[in-house]
Length: 574
Image 1 (cartoon, rainbow, N blue to C red):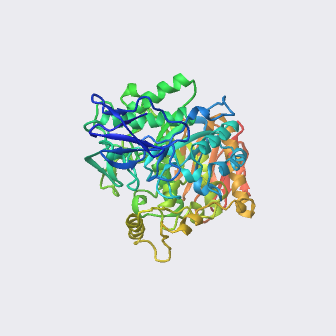
Image 2 (tube, rainbow, N blue to C red):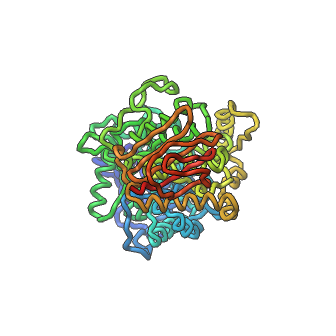
Image 3 (tube, helix red, strand yellow):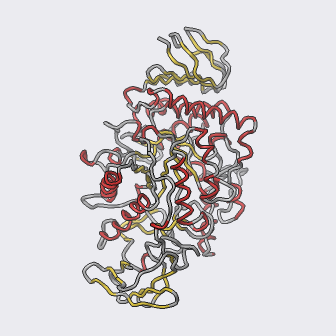
């Protein structure tokens, strides 16, 4: 048993109400307890210079929450049922983002297993779960986690997560885990009691910055890299999604992200299976996914906010906040054919030049989406895109996503146009922190329309309102939307040109005034009408209709007449 506490003068381990004095290696700052080992299920904690008890920074289980004792887990005792599974290439994936607590009524790993057949029917081969590391209380998004090695107790703890991943692999679904390495939550965060895990050199929107490049940062970097390795080896996670990497500050010669990707790539070779790292970034910087040999960090893909913003603003007409930089069909065209919209030009929203050209990259380096947890949950009412668009517009958005060169990602319930919102919810046990979060949420959205109710994140109802209503999936319009998504995913998997991620093979034509768009992917062509009126679009050639959102009014070799808010995909038969 060991723990890193470089500046402590005394460290004790307490287990079964007995304290045991640990010995320090002065060269490394690690404290050890010889001639004693914990057994599976033992509860323990540490006293540091007579302060405590504190949970283990590397605790594998916090059954009583962030302030309780740690529980020792022997990972070798779990019996995996599916030792051999195949992780498909990331470029062939259809990703489904999921929040365990709201995905089902029960909100557990075990209950989520019961819905995997739904994902199979849809055509999903990757599920991305929002952070599950131990966070304060029994409900939350997970981005204020503090025990990053411990799966949350209310979801089912370590064995629950393993059962979920094992079941996914048994059905041919790979698992991506959302991890937060840019900050930790304030409530229950005891890392500073042990060592310099944080630095005052930088600041983040969420508090103290993690110490990736200041004094004693070697062990801090190791702490997070070992965490990534643990998820992959002990839990058999297939990929990691890194939250807001623009808030990971590191001036080292080898950036933390590059060091992480190097170790994960080496681990991939050792385990002989595909492992991926996806980044969320606000930088529009191709260096993130460029190879290490070319001076990049070597991550596999990054979320493409520009694609989302361009598509969202065209369909909704919204021009507030960062959407003020978007709204033209040319923006969407640029995203589809080159990755970023802002790749070096001036951004009115940011009041500066933004981004860099994505030369040498392809669509498989980008995750495309119509919505995600942030884009929904950070709206004042947690409104989904289905609350903002007509049925026809929803079908247009889905078709453009599946016809894009990007790796497509759906957010839970999107596939049937779920009517339940996804709000921001918390369960902070510290009354002052809870009140501050509630007040901050109200102030953040005070400028929105007065008829939109802003829910209190701390109220239990806010969480309950955000749970998916699976009963509506088979009803009327929802079943129609589900069938549309299922057909689009099948179409994407059936034609190799739709998984060809080369930007050079994506041809886009549009009319800004008439508001129509054509995407050509070799033999496959998409036509969409963004307007409220019927219109004819010239498109010569013999055609076979593959998918249409509406019954076509007229379709001949010269032109296609599209109803309002409609889309058609066809195959050139020549």
